[in-house]
Length: 119
Image (tube, rainbow, N blue to C red; front, side, top):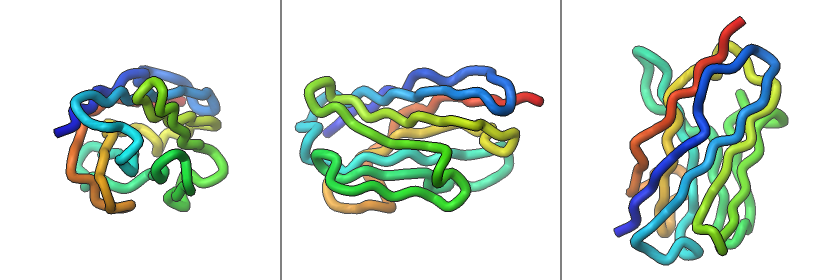
């Protein structure tokens, strides 16, 4: 079973950039499709982005496409989410996910990292 630990969240201003990291352990990282989801206060957890094994393809929600980039480093068992041009509505807890086959519904989750965007 894979364990996931996110980091890199924080308080930034609108227009700033931030990079989130998620380190995996306890499994063969290269076997997993990796995901980022986010959950704003009072809202459901929503899909942000996913990346295939060995970086074979990516997917983004329309609200972040062109601003966020997902990439992975299998040698470091790490997936990243580069977030540029941050908006107030990007404020949320960001969760890393992993699954062996699903692009949309990860079976494993991290504990989340808070991202707060201020004006």
